[in-house]
Amino acid sequence: MISFLSELDIKKKCKSYGVPLRQCPDFLFLVLGIIIIILIIASYFIAIKKIEDIRVALLTVLGFSALLVIINFIIIRSVERIVQASRSQLEFINVISHQLKAPITNISFILDAFFSKKMELTEQDKNEYLKMLKENNERMRELVKNILTVAKLEAGLLNIKKEFVSLDEIVDQKINDFKLFAQALNVKIEKDFDKSLPKIYVDSFWVKEVIGNLLDNAIKYSRGNVFIKLKCQKGKVFFEIEDDGKGIPKEEQKFIFQRFFRVKNGSTHALSGSGLGLYLSKKLVELMGGKIGFISKYNKGSKFWFFLPISS
Amino acid sequence: MSKKILFIEDEFSLQKTLSQMLQTNGYTVISSLEGKGGVNLAKREKPDLIILDLILPKMNGFEVLEELKKDEETKDIPVIVLTNLEDNQSIEKVLSYNVLHYFVKSNFTPHEIVEKINAFFK
Image (spheres, chains in turn purple, yellow):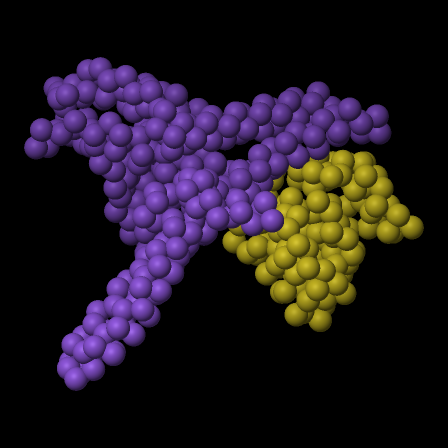
């Protein structure tokens, strides 16, 4: 009985859904119920009083029916939204746990083999095992870092400290960070920067993050060449990064900035990412007042670009 | 003659550790880091056992099973599925292909997997 009564506390229930009252299904159903009761009573009175003018009766009924259809529509949409939100939350947890499980499993397999008495590991084997441990540890660290950034971002708690910085210096620094990685995959990075670029007003930490994500993708998906361009156009500083990879199939292009999306034709290296990089990059660029986008041709490669504001 | 095992798995660390452990136990191991190449190897090499991951580039594990079971030459090769997917839907789908075992990676050490394989060949 108590649980039935608490079901009736609509305000509390709607609050727990995290949607405004006008979008809360329980509240809307109540409104709908009241309207139906009024409608039945009204149509009774209209029927006995205005029966001679059939047009008025008809219009009233039509008007009320239209109202009911609209309210019904809003209710269905609201229910959908709640279901979707909880589903995407669940999916998020599922994907994250699965992504974390992979490096954890790898580490436990490596340790088990490493300490196995039966296996006779050479010095070279041991070195390789340690290197694999390090890589898997790095993968987990990267994933956890990204999850935390996503969580902060979605809660609106991300700290952005803007200052004037030179994008060319940041890009050069990032290219340097990725030098060994690019070499390991046999990828050449070339650049062409406009001279005397104006400084941009951004948070350098997050700009580095965005450039790192784009560079990482370009190297992983390329077939050997990555080209970076910086230019100033219409009072904005543009960053462009082009690879000569397989490109993004047209039907998958609209999903590219969604979290955990990955193109189907990715190579093995490309599959080890967190699936959060482009999603985060888009949010970060937009938060700093810029825009991000891409052009991609199947089998020719992709070009990702973003611009950031010069002034505050 | 030593038994030949085909290991289809895209995680390099797992490939390296489990393969090395199987070799220590006297097996011959052939590897593929993706599904399509795995199917080709199965057809060409006719292994005595296949260890198969489900999330794979180029062709996923379900498609690999479908291909293997379609072909007269490969349909009777025993398959052990080794994955981190543990939802009921995946398990049911895999079991419908009549596989030997369904192992969830994180619940086993490579030692235990090798022991199960030893027991199978005994």
